[in-house]
Image (cartoon, rainbow, N blue to C red; front, side, top):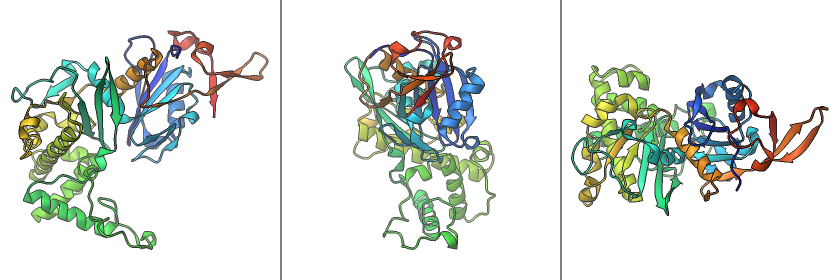
Length: 398
């Protein structure tokens, strides 16, 4: 594969925000980073076009890697918490690659340094740093949803493994959490879906749910930003108190409020059990990394809370888990770094079996105003390292 022409568009498309940046040359970090509200754009192609017009002087990148918060199948994506779905072919960018957002976050791990990570426990005790070496790594984190991915050493590099691990059953350990689960299940029976708004009569399903379907509460419904709201509401019912409806940001901020403090306490404990399950499933001896948009706001509470104790509390595998370091990612926009790393790997001609690259046909406008089709191969595009201002204006066709 020929080198991909610069600049590269990199993006981290979450359930709330779409983050974009440009990589302008070999080894460069993403620049011209901008965060766009997903709700303000009808589709992902609309958001891409808005970013390029407002932050990239309308230039066209020679390649793109977009990390999306949802499953990727071939050249198609479906966001889990935003009504965006479609094909990479619709983005108007040649050499467009799709990754799951936590797949991209996993790819960033080898590029994070000490300032990008806060240690929250390891084999050397509290505050221990990352375990060096090529062992399998896991990354997970609550944001609008709950993402999970792995990073496996392959030869001299790394291979990311995407998953939908945030949709496993919620982990509960003690009586209080069992009571919370009971409340969430009751809400599920009333609404037809765990944690969702109540179903109005006009929307009531004609067929009753399969037995047990409404009783399952998946981890993402609790261990996420919206999950904090559900957990706060459920704990109020368990404690028999009346509490105002608070946004996740308010719950995080009001730590002088006993119910908000308890919500964060339970949240961190359940996240520790969930992270241990991920570590055991992947054999993540190379470390477990916590990302997402929620945890950087509560770093001290994650470090001081029950996360690490719950992480190592497995009665059969506590020694195994105790030897695994856990770190919290505080680097800004790490998924953009991971997306850039993936494009660098593609440009160097390395294996890209875990993703789909879409080579589109580029329509180039001639001086006479007519259009001629040209392949979107790197050899037909501007030379590698070309500055954004030297880009020709092109549009991709399906």
